[in-house]
Length: 512
Image (tube, rainbow, N blue to C red; front, top):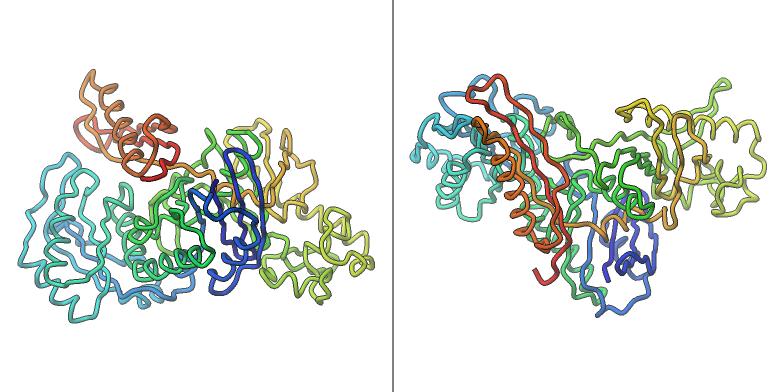
């Protein structure tokens, strides 16, 4: 039996899952400290504490910290690449406010590789010791090390870390070859964000573990990653950035699980936002371009999700005959501020209750709503969602849609351009279910030299490496399968170079 938990902006959901059966579910209001909300949601599930074999949590802790610029560690960026890469130093494209929040200390040092593994320049160990002395003097707690083409060879990053930590005991280190993909600036940015979150990750990991212990649960704890797979708590301490966008990903995976559909669009309507994503082979389609995190360009794994400010808590306004729904939301204050709960704010939930689409709160409190207004709001919601689904499509053919999330009652069964609308059982808990059924993954993304008549051999080697990484991360060896292989020839590099991405997933091996 697994417990799946998803912490959203409005609600914290918890489910108890055994195999493919959902045994219990509970919603609690998300609390400011998050942990209290998790304890409330889990305590609402009736179960034998000793029967739980794993707990999976999807959390917004880390992305919220970056967006709000709070709880971030003093961070330095060390780039190995001199004499190259001087034109665009670290932090070059960062918003000034976020850069100031983490200190923004940047160092350019010798090192780095060409795409084929040739060394740009050897490491200068004295140079790195001088950097160590400077960051110690400035009170830096965490460092992001990025070397040019570190995905081809990570040797310089690891050696630089040995030198820095020998000089500055207790220094937290994040490696770019473990976090980002090809593209030096974006990979470096992702690594810096990860480094800035390391101290907070230690606190949150301890808090999550304590919240389960307080419930009498002695089972391994896993966090959801943004590609729909799991990581254990120790990995999460050193790779907090991997949790970004795990909420929408869990909803999509949960939608696939509940509907039995592997290729479709999933629309998750929560209290604050609507997230729309595409599933391929049961996993979210990944964003192909860089992803902006609080104004910073990054290139780590992220689902291709379109988010709009539309949800059950969205505030409804009528101005000069036009209806406006959102983007502002009452969020977790819905149970106090919505009309159906005796509040004074007209929300999308009130309209759904007035239309007979939902049975929440006291329906007599919204009987007075004008029928024309109710129809206008529902038409507005339907039209906006149809437009966003259209933006996500890659072919003109109508596609099936799976509706999940507590706010999905807002959407009627017919949407323009959609072949069918599926609203599965337990749809309001799809995000927590997605966390509970998540698998373990492994990925390879780097440049290979495609020698004549050896292409199949190279692709097989990449697939095998992805499988090995999944098994090393805790997957059952006999359950691992390849879900994606992508080959992109790089015409601007010599020697038949191609970028190859391979991804494997498998079931969690408990006791790992």
